[in-house]
Image (cartoon, rainbow, N blue to C red; front, side):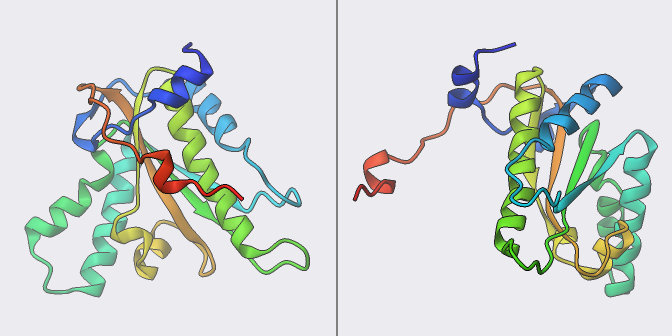
Length: 187
């Protein structure tokens, strides 16, 4: 397992086209979800949940979003529908992180949404620590009510991100990072 600081300094999202089998084992998946759930959570609300797509479940999820697309756009081409059916087949494991943020007497909804985003980041870090590649993306199903419903979300739930995890076939070089002088203000 890599040193924690080295991991944090070198973690890089994989390109989705570079994620292949093998994906995490059942034990590794369970570990990743445990890591994802260890985020700041003011009020212990667990204002998020996970939808795990692996194996045939990825194809069923893609069929569901393709049906939502076709319902919203009856003119969608067969090519576009086929692309949609293959959406979640692009990596061995896809975890949809669902934000369940809701009004609360003490905990602002924004804090709850940020907790779900932290789940996504923990999945990326955990995947890297286990030697997998991962990327966090949203794409249209995260923003479309019909697609969210097709994936089993309630009306108030939102997708914080789809985290795609697999074996990275390419190691990417680091990209330029912001100069701290440009993004840090000291009072």
